[in-house]
Amino acid sequence: MEITGNIIHILPAQSGQGKNGAWKKQEFVLETSDTYPKKACLAAWGDKIDVGRLSVGQTVKVNFDVESREYNGKWYTDLKAFSLQVINENKNAEVKEQQINTAGSEDDLPF
Figure: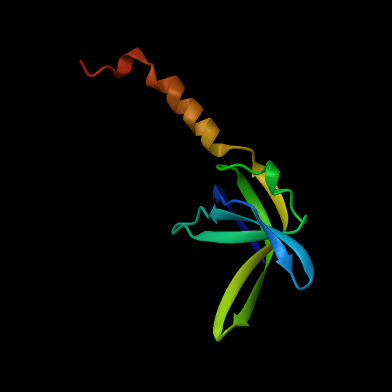
């Protein structure tokens, strides 16, 4: 599956020791730019994706698998990212810069 959206949050990296050895996981939250935006939390396991190069505000395209598992009678679903392409380095920085440049205009005085 594939999703495109803006990174709105990067969660702290997690790691641990399981029955199959050491593991590490990095989660990040995307928001789509649809008419009705959706948010999705995706997880990058191991070294499949260099999440360290990501920052809030970037537009990215992510390929992922959906996997559900049962534990003690409850079902848990993961969105496991396996590839990521940065489309826009930092959309929010460009918007903020434009707002700062226009805020100092003398024509905007209220009197």
